[in-house]
Image (tube, rainbow, N blue to C red; front, side, top):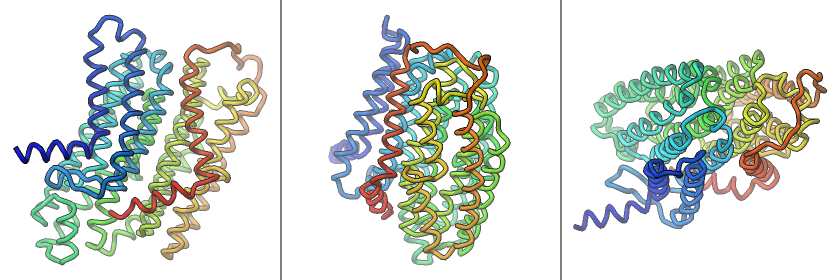
Length: 488
């Protein structure tokens, strides 16, 4: 009886997860009711309301003290709350930019929103997990939903191919992760991250090689989700084949959830098990940002360019991982929030061009876009400037914090390489900006007309634009929240 009451109290600690789960079940059951599934109107509404309520529920959790739930499986702390807020903001914006696009893609609309909510719930569970078994379960919950979302437009061969490719490689990475857990358990006798941390600090590890090898396998599994080179090969093909809203969601949500677990394990628990972690992360940061930027230079598809750009940004984030300080880890959280706004905004404009104007996602489709749609064209320019790291956008502050953390830690050459890579990235971002303000030939233009359903996409773009600019002009408050959140 007492245990049951305790579990009920603990349930308050993952209220956002429960709200998203309940919202998904309401849509799922309501789909059987006549009229409920008409054009996905109610499904998107329930998904949006559920996501907003889940975000508001964080206000209740933020006032609570750090608390371990369900016998050490989950935790409420400022670190998880900050990242859950980031994931929920991403979910809300994706729902908005999906409203018209998914209908035109020919997908099962209500099923789409159910899977989106379930994947978000899995990511939230992963962020709050402090037991590696719970991490693996959460990883599989959201991964299975994302596999289906990638291929939800079944009539498109490229979408089905992308889904199958992501499924096979995702299963392969999950096997690495699970196999790594067996070695960690063999070395420590537990999968509780706090207990492993205490054993490492006390020097009571029975087999350091097992722990190091297991940690390396876990790193491989997480590197696949973050899209770290050389585990990035799936990214451009899957991003191109998936519906554009899901591409945007994967670029933000999957990366944030995986990085949360990565920081708990390698930024805290296993940090002192080997002096070689920082060297390994240094190499990964350099090759990831370099490969991402060089490959992005050659793309004619804006979606593929943004896919390789997301790989490069993973490399920038790893610059702060190398620094290994709370300042750097706080910078990572802030970077993820800024990246959520600017990346979803950029993909929102791509969705506008693809699904609302009926054009392709290549550079030619953006010719003259700034003249035909001046407001949305200007939004795209701001998002691209933020991705470049130019003031007064949030991207500038995010890069400044991440790079300065590495400078403070003495990694000057790493920062020099990162700055050079940022200059390389400026080329393909500026190329698109120039294209947007290049007069198009008459054969490449489309008739201007009112576009049904564009209001939802516009709201998503407005949220992304406000977030991008606010975090660049007055970042101090949110940056302080991020810094206070990294006491793992």
